[in-house]
Image (tube, rainbow, N blue to C red; front, side, top):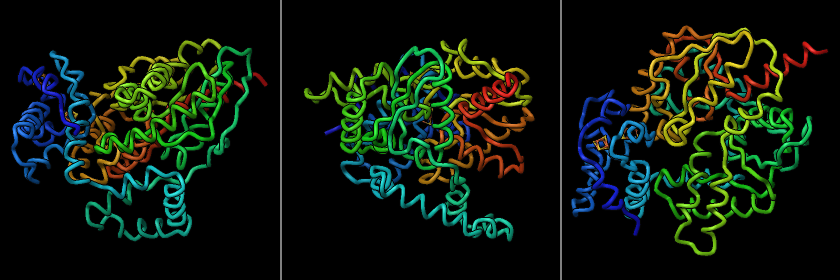
Amino acid sequence: MPQPATEDLRKCIHCGMCLEACPTYRVSGLETESPRGRIHLMQALLDGRPATPDLTIHLDRCLACRACETACPSAVPYGRLIESTRAMLQERKPANPWLLWLFGHPSRLRRAFGLLSLYERSGLRRLLHRTGVASRLPQRLRMAEGLVPQMRPRFSRDSGGVVMPRAPMRARVGLLTGCVMRESFGDVHDAAAALLSRAGVEVVIPPRQVCCGALHAHGGDLQGARELARTNVMAFSEAAVSAIVVDSAGCGAHMKHYGELLADDPEWADRANLLADKTKDLSEILLPLAGQLRFGPLPLRVTYQDPCHLAHAQGIRAEPRALLRLIPGLELVEMREADRCCGSAGIYNLTQPEFSERVLDLKMADVVATRPQAVVTANPGCMLQLRYGLERVGLDVPVYHLAEVLESSALAGDELRR
Ligand code: SF4
Ligand code: SF4
Protein backbone atom coordinates (compact mmCIF):
# COMPACT_ATOMS: atom_id res chain seq x y z
CA MET A 1 0.00 0.00 0.00
CA PRO A 2 1.40 3.48 -0.85
CA GLN A 3 2.26 5.68 2.13
CA PRO A 4 4.68 8.50 2.95
CA ALA A 5 8.17 7.18 3.70
CA THR A 6 9.28 7.50 7.32
CA GLU A 7 12.80 8.54 6.25
CA ASP A 8 11.31 11.39 4.19
CA LEU A 9 9.18 12.56 7.14
CA ARG A 10 12.17 12.37 9.51
CA LYS A 11 14.10 14.85 7.38
CA CYS A 12 11.84 17.63 8.67
CA ILE A 13 13.60 19.44 11.55
CA HIS A 14 10.49 21.58 12.23
CA CYS A 15 12.45 24.81 11.72
CA GLY A 16 9.50 26.59 10.08
CA MET A 17 11.58 28.18 7.34
CA CYS A 18 9.04 26.95 4.77
CA LEU A 19 6.07 28.70 6.37
CA GLU A 20 6.30 32.10 4.68
CA ALA A 21 6.93 30.42 1.31
CA CYS A 22 3.68 28.47 1.56
CA PRO A 23 0.74 30.22 -0.15
CA THR A 24 -1.92 28.48 1.93
CA TYR A 25 -0.16 29.47 5.15
CA ARG A 26 0.21 33.03 3.87
CA VAL A 27 -3.53 33.42 3.24
CA SER A 28 -4.68 31.61 6.40
CA GLY A 29 -1.92 32.07 8.99
CA LEU A 30 -2.72 28.56 10.24
CA GLU A 31 -0.07 26.00 11.14
CA THR A 32 -2.35 23.24 9.83
CA GLU A 33 -2.23 24.92 6.38
CA SER A 34 1.57 25.01 6.37
CA PRO A 35 4.10 22.44 5.13
CA ARG A 36 5.33 21.77 8.68
CA GLY A 37 1.77 21.30 9.92
CA ARG A 38 0.94 18.95 7.06
CA ILE A 39 4.07 16.89 7.66
CA HIS A 40 2.92 16.56 11.26
CA LEU A 41 -0.50 15.35 10.03
CA MET A 42 1.12 12.83 7.66
CA GLN A 43 3.10 11.41 10.59
CA ALA A 44 -0.10 11.25 12.66
CA LEU A 45 -1.79 9.23 9.89
CA LEU A 46 1.15 6.82 9.83
CA ASP A 47 0.89 6.52 13.61
CA GLY A 48 -2.70 5.35 13.20
CA ARG A 49 -4.74 8.54 13.65
CA PRO A 50 -7.99 8.13 11.68
CA ALA A 51 -8.26 10.01 8.38
CA THR A 52 -11.24 12.11 9.43
CA PRO A 53 -12.50 14.92 7.16
CA ASP A 54 -11.23 17.43 9.77
CA LEU A 55 -7.72 16.10 9.24
CA THR A 56 -7.72 15.41 5.50
CA ILE A 57 -9.10 18.85 4.58
CA HIS A 58 -5.69 20.36 5.45
CA LEU A 59 -3.93 17.91 3.15
CA ASP A 60 -6.50 18.53 0.41
CA ARG A 61 -5.82 22.25 0.67
CA CYS A 62 -2.15 21.78 -0.21
CA LEU A 63 -1.49 23.13 -3.71
CA ALA A 64 1.41 20.69 -4.22
CA CYS A 65 3.24 23.76 -5.54
CA ARG A 66 6.48 22.64 -3.86
CA ALA A 67 7.52 26.16 -2.85
CA CYS A 68 8.30 24.60 0.53
CA GLU A 69 10.94 22.38 -1.11
CA THR A 70 12.74 25.44 -2.43
CA ALA A 71 12.68 27.06 1.03
CA CYS A 72 13.60 23.97 3.05
CA PRO A 73 17.18 23.79 4.39
CA SER A 74 16.78 20.09 5.17
CA ALA A 75 15.87 18.87 1.66
CA VAL A 76 12.49 17.45 2.70
CA PRO A 77 11.03 15.90 -0.49
CA TYR A 78 7.63 17.43 0.16
CA GLY A 79 6.25 16.75 -3.35
CA ARG A 80 6.89 13.03 -2.89
CA LEU A 81 5.37 13.12 0.59
CA ILE A 82 2.10 14.76 -0.43
CA GLU A 83 1.78 12.53 -3.51
CA SER A 84 2.23 9.32 -1.51
CA THR A 85 -0.07 10.56 1.27
CA ARG A 86 -2.78 11.31 -1.27
CA ALA A 87 -2.27 7.90 -2.86
CA MET A 88 -2.71 6.30 0.58
CA LEU A 89 -5.91 8.28 1.24
CA GLN A 90 -7.16 7.65 -2.29
CA GLU A 91 -6.92 3.90 -1.75
CA ARG A 92 -9.14 4.25 1.29
CA LYS A 93 -11.62 6.66 -0.28
CA PRO A 94 -11.22 7.80 -3.92
CA ALA A 95 -11.53 11.59 -4.31
CA ASN A 96 -12.75 13.30 -7.51
CA PRO A 97 -12.83 10.07 -9.56
CA TRP A 98 -14.87 11.83 -12.28
CA LEU A 99 -12.07 14.28 -13.02
CA LEU A 100 -9.50 11.50 -13.30
CA TRP A 101 -11.93 9.51 -15.47
CA LEU A 102 -12.28 12.53 -17.75
CA PHE A 103 -8.60 13.42 -18.10
CA GLY A 104 -7.46 9.83 -18.63
CA HIS A 105 -9.23 9.43 -21.96
CA PRO A 106 -8.67 11.81 -24.88
CA SER A 107 -12.07 11.07 -26.44
CA ARG A 108 -13.95 11.94 -23.23
CA LEU A 109 -11.95 15.12 -22.80
CA ARG A 110 -12.56 16.06 -26.43
CA ARG A 111 -16.33 15.67 -25.96
CA ALA A 112 -16.19 17.78 -22.80
CA PHE A 113 -14.26 20.52 -24.59
CA GLY A 114 -16.77 20.27 -27.45
CA LEU A 115 -19.53 21.15 -24.97
CA LEU A 116 -17.50 24.06 -23.61
CA SER A 117 -16.96 25.28 -27.16
CA LEU A 118 -20.72 25.15 -27.76
CA TYR A 119 -21.28 27.13 -24.55
CA GLU A 120 -18.97 29.85 -25.86
CA ARG A 121 -20.04 29.82 -29.52
CA SER A 122 -23.75 29.89 -28.67
CA GLY A 123 -23.29 33.30 -27.03
CA LEU A 124 -24.56 31.99 -23.69
CA ARG A 125 -21.31 32.83 -22.00
CA ARG A 126 -21.34 36.41 -23.28
CA LEU A 127 -24.94 36.77 -22.14
CA LEU A 128 -24.16 35.50 -18.61
CA HIS A 129 -21.33 38.00 -18.31
CA ARG A 130 -23.18 40.93 -19.86
CA THR A 131 -26.16 40.51 -17.57
CA GLY A 132 -23.96 40.05 -14.47
CA VAL A 133 -25.38 36.55 -13.86
CA ALA A 134 -21.88 34.99 -14.02
CA SER A 135 -20.63 37.10 -11.11
CA ARG A 136 -23.65 36.13 -8.98
CA LEU A 137 -23.13 32.37 -9.34
CA PRO A 138 -22.16 30.41 -6.19
CA GLN A 139 -18.37 30.50 -5.68
CA ARG A 140 -17.60 27.00 -7.00
CA LEU A 141 -19.69 27.48 -10.15
CA ARG A 142 -18.46 31.04 -10.68
CA MET A 143 -14.88 29.88 -10.55
CA ALA A 144 -15.48 26.90 -12.85
CA GLU A 145 -17.23 29.22 -15.30
CA GLY A 146 -14.42 31.76 -15.12
CA LEU A 147 -11.89 29.06 -15.93
CA VAL A 148 -13.60 27.83 -19.09
CA PRO A 149 -10.84 28.03 -21.71
CA GLN A 150 -11.33 30.37 -24.65
CA MET A 151 -11.66 28.27 -27.77
CA ARG A 152 -8.43 28.57 -29.70
CA PRO A 153 -7.31 26.92 -32.94
CA ARG A 154 -6.56 23.19 -32.79
CA PHE A 155 -2.97 21.99 -33.07
CA SER A 156 -2.26 21.59 -36.78
CA ARG A 157 -0.54 18.21 -36.11
CA ASP A 158 -3.31 17.01 -33.79
CA SER A 159 -3.21 13.44 -35.04
CA GLY A 160 0.58 13.21 -35.13
CA GLY A 161 3.21 13.95 -37.74
CA VAL A 162 6.53 15.67 -38.24
CA VAL A 163 7.46 19.36 -38.47
CA MET A 164 10.58 19.66 -40.63
CA PRO A 165 13.45 21.97 -39.66
CA ARG A 166 13.64 25.32 -41.45
CA ALA A 167 17.38 25.68 -40.82
CA PRO A 168 20.30 23.22 -40.98
CA MET A 169 19.24 20.30 -38.79
CA ARG A 170 20.61 20.24 -35.26
CA ALA A 171 18.35 17.76 -33.48
CA ARG A 172 15.27 15.55 -33.74
CA VAL A 173 12.92 15.83 -30.79
CA GLY A 174 9.46 14.63 -29.77
CA LEU A 175 6.70 16.99 -28.64
CA LEU A 176 4.22 16.11 -25.91
CA THR A 177 0.72 17.20 -26.86
CA GLY A 178 -0.87 16.39 -23.46
CA CYS A 179 -4.56 16.67 -22.59
CA VAL A 180 -5.68 20.25 -21.79
CA MET A 181 -2.91 21.68 -23.99
CA ARG A 182 -4.02 19.51 -26.88
CA GLU A 183 -7.69 20.37 -26.55
CA SER A 184 -7.45 24.03 -25.77
CA PHE A 185 -3.98 25.43 -26.52
CA GLY A 186 -3.24 23.96 -29.96
CA ASP A 187 -1.88 27.29 -31.16
CA VAL A 188 0.73 27.21 -28.38
CA HIS A 189 1.93 23.82 -29.64
CA ASP A 190 2.08 25.27 -33.16
CA ALA A 191 4.15 28.21 -31.87
CA ALA A 192 6.49 25.85 -30.01
CA ALA A 193 6.94 23.60 -33.05
CA ALA A 194 7.52 26.63 -35.31
CA LEU A 195 10.22 28.00 -32.98
CA LEU A 196 11.98 24.64 -32.82
CA SER A 197 11.77 24.30 -36.59
CA ARG A 198 13.28 27.80 -37.05
CA ALA A 199 16.15 26.72 -34.80
CA GLY A 200 16.88 23.68 -36.99
CA VAL A 201 15.03 21.07 -34.95
CA GLU A 202 12.90 18.34 -36.48
CA VAL A 203 9.79 17.90 -34.32
CA VAL A 204 8.07 14.51 -34.15
CA ILE A 205 4.56 14.26 -32.73
CA PRO A 206 3.95 10.56 -31.94
CA PRO A 207 0.25 9.84 -32.60
CA ARG A 208 -0.09 7.26 -29.83
CA GLN A 209 0.98 9.50 -26.95
CA VAL A 210 -1.53 10.25 -24.17
CA CYS A 211 -2.03 12.61 -21.20
CA CYS A 212 1.17 12.63 -19.06
CA GLY A 213 -0.75 11.50 -15.95
CA ALA A 214 0.29 14.39 -13.69
CA LEU A 215 -3.27 15.09 -12.57
CA HIS A 216 -3.73 11.43 -11.69
CA ALA A 217 -0.50 11.31 -9.67
CA HIS A 218 -1.25 14.55 -7.83
CA GLY A 219 -4.74 13.32 -7.07
CA GLY A 220 -3.37 10.06 -5.62
CA ASP A 221 -4.30 7.73 -8.52
CA LEU A 222 -0.83 6.24 -8.98
CA GLN A 223 -2.17 3.21 -10.85
CA GLY A 224 -3.79 5.42 -13.49
CA ALA A 225 -0.63 7.57 -13.65
CA ARG A 226 1.53 4.47 -14.24
CA GLU A 227 -0.67 3.21 -17.07
CA LEU A 228 -0.45 6.56 -18.86
CA ALA A 229 3.33 6.72 -18.27
CA ARG A 230 3.82 3.28 -19.86
CA THR A 231 1.84 4.33 -22.95
CA ASN A 232 3.97 7.47 -23.33
CA VAL A 233 7.22 5.58 -22.79
CA MET A 234 6.18 3.25 -25.61
CA ALA A 235 5.03 6.07 -27.92
CA PHE A 236 8.20 8.15 -27.54
CA SER A 237 10.59 5.15 -27.69
CA GLU A 238 9.14 4.30 -31.11
CA ALA A 239 9.79 7.88 -32.27
CA ALA A 240 13.58 7.54 -31.77
CA VAL A 241 14.15 11.15 -30.64
CA SER A 242 17.01 12.66 -28.66
CA ALA A 243 14.75 14.75 -26.40
CA ILE A 244 11.09 15.11 -25.52
CA VAL A 245 10.02 18.75 -25.47
CA VAL A 246 7.20 19.78 -23.16
CA ASP A 247 5.59 23.22 -23.27
CA SER A 248 3.46 22.68 -20.17
CA ALA A 249 5.39 22.98 -16.91
CA GLY A 250 3.20 20.57 -14.93
CA CYS A 251 3.53 17.83 -17.54
CA GLY A 252 7.31 18.30 -17.84
CA ALA A 253 7.82 18.10 -14.08
CA HIS A 254 5.81 14.90 -13.92
CA MET A 255 7.51 13.23 -16.90
CA LYS A 256 10.90 13.94 -15.37
CA HIS A 257 9.74 11.60 -12.58
CA TYR A 258 8.57 8.70 -14.75
CA GLY A 259 11.65 6.75 -13.59
CA GLU A 260 10.56 7.05 -9.96
CA LEU A 261 6.94 6.28 -10.84
CA LEU A 262 7.83 3.00 -12.59
CA ALA A 263 10.86 2.11 -10.44
CA ASP A 264 9.20 -1.07 -9.13
CA ASP A 265 8.26 -2.33 -12.57
CA PRO A 266 11.27 -4.27 -13.93
CA GLU A 267 9.83 -4.35 -17.44
CA TRP A 268 9.52 -0.56 -17.68
CA ALA A 269 11.89 1.01 -15.15
CA ASP A 270 14.91 1.46 -17.46
CA ARG A 271 12.88 2.83 -20.35
CA ALA A 272 11.01 5.17 -18.00
CA ASN A 273 14.32 6.49 -16.66
CA LEU A 274 15.52 7.09 -20.20
CA LEU A 275 12.37 9.04 -21.07
CA ALA A 276 12.67 11.07 -17.85
CA ASP A 277 16.27 12.00 -18.71
CA LYS A 278 15.25 13.05 -22.20
CA THR A 279 12.37 15.26 -21.04
CA LYS A 280 13.10 18.98 -21.42
CA ASP A 281 11.05 22.11 -20.99
CA LEU A 282 10.72 24.13 -24.20
CA SER A 283 12.83 26.96 -22.70
CA GLU A 284 15.64 24.52 -21.81
CA ILE A 285 15.87 23.38 -25.42
CA LEU A 286 15.40 26.79 -27.01
CA LEU A 287 17.86 28.89 -25.02
CA PRO A 288 21.04 27.17 -26.28
CA LEU A 289 19.64 27.41 -29.82
CA ALA A 290 18.55 31.04 -29.52
CA GLY A 291 21.44 32.17 -31.71
CA GLN A 292 19.61 30.51 -34.61
CA LEU A 293 16.48 32.58 -33.99
CA ARG A 294 16.10 36.11 -35.26
CA PHE A 295 13.68 38.06 -33.15
CA GLY A 296 11.88 41.16 -34.35
CA PRO A 297 10.63 44.02 -32.19
CA LEU A 298 7.70 43.53 -29.83
CA PRO A 299 7.08 46.73 -27.87
CA LEU A 300 5.34 45.31 -24.82
CA ARG A 301 5.67 45.69 -21.06
CA VAL A 302 5.25 42.20 -19.61
CA THR A 303 5.57 40.46 -16.30
CA TYR A 304 6.48 36.78 -16.05
CA GLN A 305 4.75 34.36 -13.67
CA ASP A 306 6.89 31.31 -12.86
CA PRO A 307 4.76 28.18 -13.00
CA CYS A 308 5.42 26.28 -9.74
CA HIS A 309 6.23 23.12 -11.62
CA LEU A 310 8.83 24.94 -13.67
CA ALA A 311 10.48 26.97 -10.88
CA HIS A 312 10.16 24.74 -7.81
CA ALA A 313 9.88 21.29 -9.36
CA GLN A 314 12.33 21.70 -12.28
CA GLY A 315 14.49 24.57 -11.06
CA ILE A 316 13.90 26.48 -14.32
CA ARG A 317 13.72 30.22 -13.72
CA ALA A 318 16.49 31.82 -15.76
CA GLU A 319 15.78 30.30 -19.19
CA PRO A 320 12.31 31.81 -19.86
CA ARG A 321 13.53 35.22 -18.68
CA ALA A 322 16.70 35.02 -20.78
CA LEU A 323 14.58 34.22 -23.84
CA LEU A 324 12.18 37.10 -23.18
CA ARG A 325 15.15 39.48 -22.81
CA LEU A 326 16.27 38.59 -26.34
CA ILE A 327 13.15 40.26 -27.77
CA PRO A 328 13.87 43.82 -28.93
CA GLY A 329 11.46 46.35 -27.42
CA LEU A 330 10.03 43.97 -24.83
CA GLU A 331 10.28 45.22 -21.27
CA LEU A 332 10.27 42.53 -18.60
CA VAL A 333 9.08 43.86 -15.26
CA GLU A 334 9.52 41.46 -12.37
CA MET A 335 6.59 41.12 -9.99
CA ARG A 336 7.13 40.44 -6.30
CA GLU A 337 7.50 36.70 -5.60
CA ALA A 338 6.92 35.68 -9.20
CA ASP A 339 7.37 32.04 -8.20
CA ARG A 340 4.53 32.05 -5.65
CA CYS A 341 1.64 29.87 -6.82
CA CYS A 342 -1.33 31.55 -8.53
CA GLY A 343 -3.76 29.01 -7.05
CA SER A 344 -4.33 26.98 -10.20
CA ALA A 345 -2.44 23.80 -9.22
CA GLY A 346 -3.95 21.24 -11.58
CA ILE A 347 -7.60 20.88 -10.62
CA TYR A 348 -7.19 22.63 -7.24
CA ASN A 349 -9.16 25.66 -8.45
CA LEU A 350 -12.10 23.33 -9.10
CA THR A 351 -11.79 21.26 -5.93
CA GLN A 352 -10.75 24.04 -3.48
CA PRO A 353 -12.26 27.21 -4.98
CA GLU A 354 -12.20 29.22 -1.76
CA PHE A 355 -8.50 28.79 -1.04
CA SER A 356 -7.69 29.01 -4.74
CA GLU A 357 -9.32 32.45 -4.96
CA ARG A 358 -7.56 33.68 -1.83
CA VAL A 359 -4.20 32.58 -3.21
CA LEU A 360 -5.08 34.13 -6.57
CA ASP A 361 -6.04 37.48 -5.02
CA LEU A 362 -2.64 37.63 -3.30
CA LYS A 363 -0.97 36.95 -6.65
CA MET A 364 -3.05 39.52 -8.55
CA ALA A 365 -1.97 42.33 -6.23
CA ASP A 366 1.62 41.65 -7.29
CA VAL A 367 0.69 41.37 -10.98
CA VAL A 368 -1.25 44.65 -10.96
CA ALA A 369 1.65 46.47 -9.26
CA THR A 370 3.83 45.89 -12.35
CA ARG A 371 1.30 47.71 -14.61
CA PRO A 372 1.74 45.08 -17.33
CA GLN A 373 0.45 45.17 -20.89
CA ALA A 374 0.56 41.37 -20.89
CA VAL A 375 1.30 38.54 -18.47
CA VAL A 376 3.53 35.71 -19.65
CA THR A 377 3.75 32.22 -18.21
CA ALA A 378 4.41 28.66 -19.41
CA ASN A 379 1.65 26.40 -18.17
CA PRO A 380 -1.98 26.09 -19.35
CA GLY A 381 -3.48 25.95 -15.84
CA CYS A 382 -1.64 29.14 -14.85
CA MET A 383 -2.83 30.84 -18.05
CA LEU A 384 -6.49 30.10 -17.27
CA GLN A 385 -6.15 31.05 -13.61
CA LEU A 386 -4.33 34.31 -14.34
CA ARG A 387 -6.89 35.26 -16.98
CA TYR A 388 -9.64 34.65 -14.40
CA GLY A 389 -7.68 36.71 -11.85
CA LEU A 390 -7.24 39.61 -14.27
CA GLU A 391 -10.98 39.61 -14.98
CA ARG A 392 -11.61 39.63 -11.22
CA VAL A 393 -9.51 42.75 -10.73
CA GLY A 394 -10.80 44.38 -13.92
CA LEU A 395 -7.43 44.54 -15.67
CA ASP A 396 -7.95 44.02 -19.38
CA VAL A 397 -4.60 42.59 -20.48
CA PRO A 398 -3.89 39.28 -22.20
CA VAL A 399 -2.11 36.25 -20.77
CA TYR A 400 0.37 34.67 -23.17
CA HIS A 401 2.35 31.48 -23.20
CA LEU A 402 6.09 32.06 -23.55
CA ALA A 403 6.03 30.22 -26.91
CA GLU A 404 3.41 32.61 -28.29
CA VAL A 405 5.44 35.69 -27.39
CA LEU A 406 8.66 34.27 -28.82
CA GLU A 407 6.98 33.14 -32.04
CA SER A 408 5.26 36.55 -32.47
CA SER A 409 8.65 38.19 -32.18
CA ALA A 410 10.18 35.71 -34.65
CA LEU A 411 7.36 36.50 -37.11
CA ALA A 412 8.09 40.20 -36.65
CA GLY A 413 11.70 39.34 -37.50
CA ASP A 414 10.50 37.62 -40.71
CA GLU A 415 8.53 40.75 -41.66
CA LEU A 416 11.59 42.95 -41.23
CA ARG A 417 13.65 40.78 -43.56
CA ARG A 418 11.04 40.84 -46.34
S1 SF4 B 1 3.34 22.30 -1.62
FE1 SF4 B 1 2.82 24.50 -1.62
S2 SF4 B 1 0.80 24.63 -0.62
FE2 SF4 B 1 1.63 22.58 -0.16
S3 SF4 B 1 2.65 22.82 1.80
FE3 SF4 B 1 4.24 23.16 0.23
S4 SF4 B 1 4.25 25.37 -0.13
FE4 SF4 B 1 2.34 24.90 0.98
S1 SF4 C 1 9.76 21.13 5.76
FE1 SF4 C 1 11.86 21.90 5.81
S2 SF4 C 1 11.66 24.11 6.13
FE2 SF4 C 1 9.68 23.20 6.65
S3 SF4 C 1 9.77 22.87 8.86
FE3 SF4 C 1 10.46 20.96 7.88
S4 SF4 C 1 12.69 21.15 7.73
FE4 SF4 C 1 11.90 23.21 8.16
